[in-house]
Amino acid sequence: MILLDRVTKIYNKNLGPALDRVSLHVEPKEFVVIIGQSGSGKTTLLKLLTREERPTSGKIIVGGIDYDKLRDRDIPLLRRKVGTVFQDFKLLPNRTVFENVAFALEIVGVGGREIKNTVPKVLDIVNLKSQADHMPQELSGGERQRVAIARAIVRQPKILIADEPTGNLDPKHAWDVIRVLEKINHYGTTVLLTTHNQEIVNKLKRRVVTIEHGHVGSDRASAQYDVKN
Ligand code: ADP
Ligand code: MG
Image (cartoon, rainbow, N blue to C red; front, top):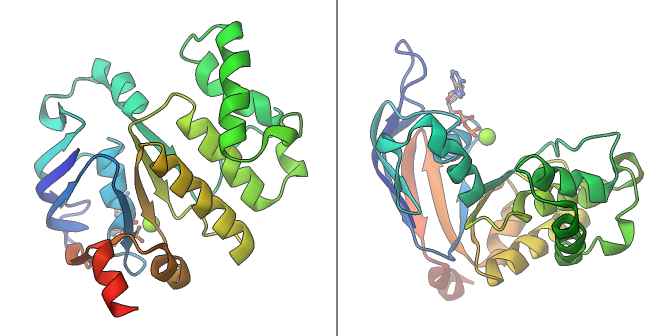
């Protein structure tokens, strides 16, 4: 469960708040699409959840972790619960697809046998099993993003945060990425997705939270979409 209670984020006192008393409740296994104009506060919201930024005021609880009580030594636990994917894929250019995903396990001390066992399964989920030995530069943008998703989910996070993961992709590759996010959600992971792509928003038929100037402008359940369309 994700809970934000009247969360405000002020980066600069001379400017308005980036987020202003935002309250949001996301149930386990939900798929939530977050939309809003550039600068409305979407990335800030996600960065508060990953603890890249801290709120100026308000309460955040993610998967039972109260962020007010979070100590530095709890951060690895949080990283395990919350996987992240960004617009720019941030892959290691000199490592293969397999090695990019394996790296996420190596850095937390997972052994070679488990890595050999786990990585192909995850590459299968993102439909990249046959490209395991390819280098990132040999892949399309959509394939690169799916490597980044594989890396984000290889430790089985409860929550996957994807900040404009299709921002650099053409429509076909964007849909390949969205389908993979749906599959991961179907397996039980909560997904928070930000996007500018209206077609994706309309076709996904999921809960849509609109951020407007740091406020929650609207919060529309997926069922309401069926009525409209
Ligand atoms: P979005 O992702 O919806 O485009 P952001 O969360 O990135 O919006 O930005 C919201 C507001 O906060 C913008 O006005 C932006 O300029 C400001 N902002 C974002 N990050 C920082 C930062 N690190 N320092 C100062 N201001 C920031
Ligand atoms: Mg953003």
